[in-house]
Length: 511
Image 1 (cartoon, rainbow, N blue to C red):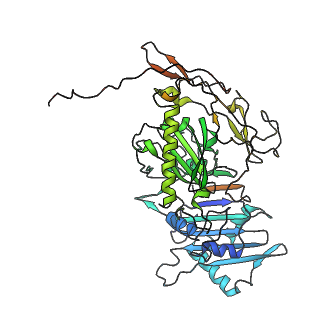
Image 2 (spheres, one colour):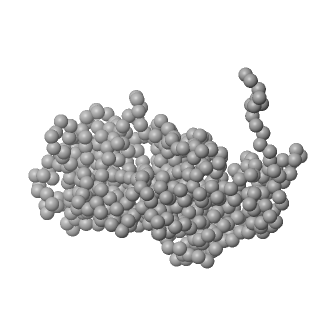
Image 3 (spheres, rainbow, N blue to C red):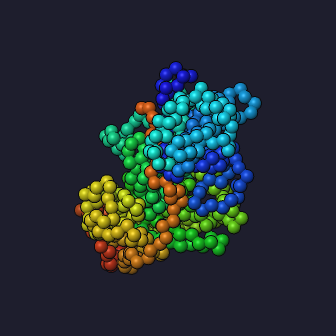
C-alpha cells in the first residue's frame, strides 16, 4: 500500500475472515489492553485476558488497522505506535457507523461528530487508509456481507530484510512448487526440544504448515497467499493407531498414538497437545524420546487436555502466548503418564525391530477426505485412489455417496487399528502373540471444535506483493507391503536376538 509517511509503497500483512463481524462493544474489548472479565468461562473461545491481539499485532508490526462489519454496523479502529509516539497517554482512534436504511451513518450513540472526525483524520494521516480506501476494502464483504479485516504494516525487521518472508512460494516440502503460497519466519529457526536433532520442523517457521495442524477437528476453509491450506488432522493420518485412556488426578484423558509417515521421514516424534481444539504444544518429547533421538522415531501422540488444565473456578494453565502450559503438579503428572504411554507403545510395536527406510513409507490406517460443504471428515473405502479426488469434494460424490447430514465417524476408545499386514512390527513381549486389527466404525462422537462456527473462510494475504522378510545376509528388514487396508490376524515368528557390538578400541587397550 502507498504510505504518505514513507513516500512510497510499504508491505502490509492482511488477515481477512467472513465471519459475523464485531459490534462496537466487541471491537472496544478487542483493542483495549485487558478487560475486567478474565475468569469468564467460554468453551468456544481461547482468549481470556484481552491482550492477545495487541501483543501479537505489535510483535509483527508497529501499526494496525481493524475493519469490521456486522449486518447493522461498521467500525474502524487504529492501533498505532507511530501515532502514539512521544505521547503520555495512549490513544486508539475508533470510528463507528450504524446502518440507516441502505447507508452507513456515524453512530452518534457512541461518539460525537467531532470525535469521529478527529479519529478519522488521525487514521488518514498516519496510515495508508482514507475514507475511500476504507470503503473499497469493506466492499470485499459484499453488500450484505460481514466479517473482519486486519492490516498490519511497518513490519518487524530481520537485519536489512523483514522478519517475515512472503515472497518465497516454495517450502522445504515443495521445493519446485511455485504455486505453494506461504508466509515464513525468515530465520527458519527450529525450536529447541530435549532429545531432538532434526532440523526439519517446518511447523516452527511456516504459517502454511502450522495451519495444517492448528485445529484438532478442522472445519474452516483457510488460504495463505492464495494457496488453499489442506488440513491434516493428525489422529486421522497415523498407522498402527492405538487409542489409550488414562486417569490423572481423577480426570480422564485420551491419547491417540500412531506412526506417521511424514514425521518418520523428518526424524521427528512427540506429542501434540491441544486445548479447546487448538494446538498449544507440538512435538513434545516425553519418556525415552527425551534421551535418544532415534527412540520413538515417527511416533506421534495426539491429545486434547482441556478437561485437565481447566478447573472449576474458570482458571486455565495455558500460557498467555498460547504456546505452552504453566508448570504445575497436574502438568507434571501428565508428562509422566505421557512418557510411560509412549514408551510402552514403542516397545510393544516397534522396539527390537530394524526400522529401515521402507518403514517410513507406511500408509495411514485409513484414508480420510473432508467435505468441501459440511467440512466433515469421511473414511474412504479400501483401495480407493485418493489422488483421483477433486480439490472440492462433497459427501454425495464417490466413494462416500452419502449426505452431509450423516454424522462423522470416530475411532472407539482402546482400539488398535492395523490397516496393513505388519507381522514384523512387534516387540519381544509379543513374539508368540497374534496381532489383530479392529476398527469401530459404529461409535459416533460429537463434533466438538473451538473455532467460531460463524467463520467459514479465512484468508491471510500480504497486500504487496510391513511385512518382515529374511534378506540374503540373514538380517531382518521391513518391506513396504501396505497397499491393503484389510485387517490381518497371523502368528508371529520369534525374532532373532541381535548382539550389540561395542564400538571403539578394546577396553584393555591403552592410547
